[in-house]
Amino acid sequence: MGAGHAHVLYRDAASPVHRLPPEVKIAAMVAFTLAVVGTPRGAFWAFGAYALLVAVVATLARVGPGWLLRRSLIELPFVLFAVALPFLGAGERVEVLGLSLSSDGLLGAWNIVAKGTLGVLASLVLAATTTTRDLIVGLDRLRCPQILTQIATFMLRYLDVLVGEARRMRVARMSRGDDPRFLWQLRGFATGVGALFLRAFERGERVYLAMLSRGYTGRMPAVWQGAGAATAGQWLVAATVPALAAGIAAMAVVLT
Image (cartoon, one colour):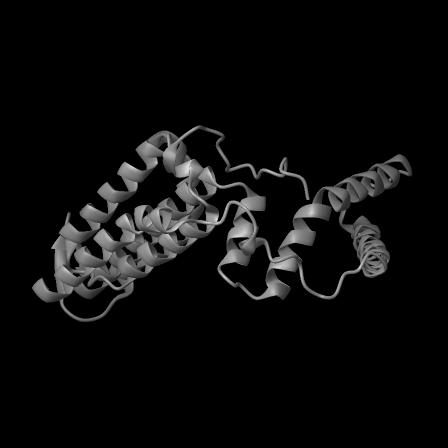
């Protein structure tokens, strides 16, 4: 797997966050998200502090606010669900702009939007500063189950191959008069999907046999023991943000 496998969210830059090993960034993001989730929904000031932490890290990583906001639109379906809660919630009602809304529903909507947005922004900062290959290496160094990291590795390695195969099959269908826009031609499309699955399965068998012939024993190399693993100093640097987030969460629990 070459180092050139970078996903569409990755932004190449020479920043301190980019230079951190992937395992410390993954662990910091997960710990930060857990602190956010554990914060009482009524501690509004705490969510502002979390947003400030994300903004500081994004600035250090040279990730612009416009880029983050555009990519964070992925959470829009959850926001739409949250908007319905004040109307559907039970309990005490309050008047907002002439509308009778549930007080509990308003807090629930705020809870979903605030925590979801912060989680998405933290994930985007991680994705913007870490290539796909490094994400898998980081998970491997964190002792993620080998079966998961291997599946992700092979998916990354052969996704382009499968996409190219699907494109060639589509061109072949179109050259024979197929047009998937018509409902009665969906059978041909379904047949193509089945054929692609069979080709992928057969290719996977050939790749597996080739790996066995080269000494594959069911485990990938122990990359966490190789060069580039995080030092104690790098772990301490990366722990700054989740430690501050944990302190904010603890203070929010005490004060709320």
